[in-house]
Image 1 (cartoon, rainbow, N blue to C red):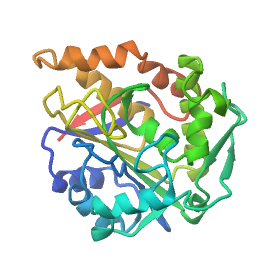
Image 2: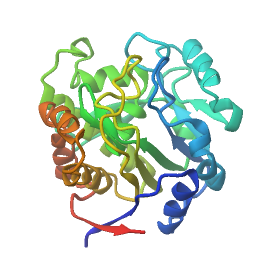
Image 3: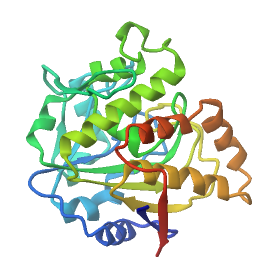
Image 4: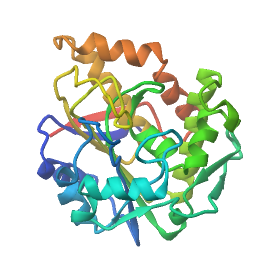
Length: 288
């Protein structure tokens, strides 16, 4: 049975809430809402006011983790300061999952590259997960969406380096590239398994630069906005976004974004994730 992916071309905070409601998905207990807080200087990340209606709806806690690279988010002190500067605390309860150690380790018995995933220990305080992703390009992964949020996004600072290094932290920027992509899929699978189906995913195809929100100096968006997607399948939702980019043949910026995705073999993350069977590349796109 194909996964259902809901899609609207209208991009507003209210449409995010509307498309989420179509999932008819109960997120029980205490809900962690994974966002990207935005690197200092980045102009493309989706602001707190955009996400406010959906966060209010599920009455969850916005969660983030520290980065593994130099910048304004690689320590708890600096990241907390930037979160306040970007206005997240103005609207929401915010929890830095790896604000203090030790990390929580999730086992990945079926992992192809890594057999364990290191996440912020506060993840243990939550019963459900809502992943709010800004779909765009990425300097290393080719693209960023739901799978990246599940893996690199939920990983602690150490865990990010572990994934990037394909299990060898000292190779954070030098590991075999496809092994890094496969390690992302492995890590994502462990978070999906941890929440045992109590998860939902929203991808917003807006401000689509070739660069990630983790870039302090990111290129401006190269493609026109496409829309909002929602699913309970993280693989299907990312595949649908990739397909929508390929279908946008009349967009003059399409070639630039596709060059970034293809040159980094971005679709291999989806291929590796599908091989782990925590979702499907086969989907039904339901436009509203």
